[in-house]
Length: 135
Length: 135
DNA sequence: CATGTATTTGACGTTAACGTTAACCTCTTC
DNA sequence: GAAGAGGTTAACGTTAACGTCAAATACATG
Image (tube, each protein chain N blue to C red):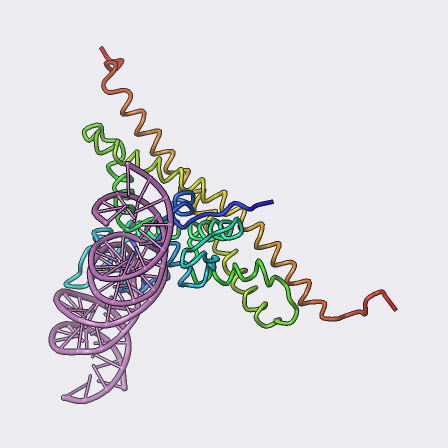
C-alpha cells in the first residue's frame, strides 16, 4: 500500500508553519526527510514528528529540549545508556514540575480573565440603558 | 501602621529575578516605584504587580501584553473607553483560547512524559535482576 | 579616611527562532 | 521558448528579554 507523501509547502500549509521554519528544524536536526533529487519529501512519520515539535513549542520548550525529548520516543529505555537516561529523566521531572506550576498559573489566570471579561461585557452591553432608580 | 518597603535587591531576591530585570520592567513602564533620593523603593503593591508580571511570563505572555493586562486591573471597566475595552477584550478572548489549547497540550504531554518516566525507572531499577523464567 | 557595599544610568552584547532577500535550478504549460 | 510556479542553498536581518560591563555616586563601618 502506497504511503502518502508531502512536499515541503504542502506540509507547511497543513501544519500552519512556513517552509523556512521546516528547513530550520531540519538544520537543527529535528527532521530528516528523504530527498527526491534535491527536493525534500516527507512521509507520515515526518509529519507526526513535526506535530510533536509544534506541541512542544506551544508548551514553551526550546528546540534543543524538544530534540532531546524526541530522541526519547525512539531510544526510549535502552539500558545500554543508563546515564544518558538518568540525565533525560532529570530534565523530564524538572519540566513536569514546571508544567504543573503552569497548570496552576493557568487556572488562576483564566479565572481572573473571565471575571474581567464578564465585567467588561456587562459594561459594554448596558450603555446607560436605564436611569438609576433615584427619581 | 507602617508599611513594609523593599530595596531593589531585596525585591529581586524574594521574587527570584535579577535587579537588571526589575529595572528593565520599569523601562517598559510595568513598574513605577517611589524613589528615596535616587534609590528605588518598592511597596507591597509594587511587589504584587511584579508577581503578576512573573506569572504572566510563565504563561508565555509578552511583556507588552502583560502591560495591557495590568492596565485592566486598574482601569477595569470604565465605560468612557469602550473601544479600548473592546480591543483588550478581543485580546483576552484570543488568549483564553490559546490557554485552553495549552491545557490540552499539557495534559497530553504530562501523560506521555510520565509514561516514559516510569518505563525508564523500571529499566533503571531492575538492571538484569533476575534471569528470565526460561531455564 | 580608606574601604566596602549597594545603588544609579548608560551602552553594548547575546541568544533563540525564525524572516527576508538573493541568486540559482527545474518543471510544466501556454 | 517564455513565463510562472515551485524548489534549492547561503547569508544577512530582526526582535524580545534580558546579561554584562563601565563609570559614577552614596552611605556605613572599622
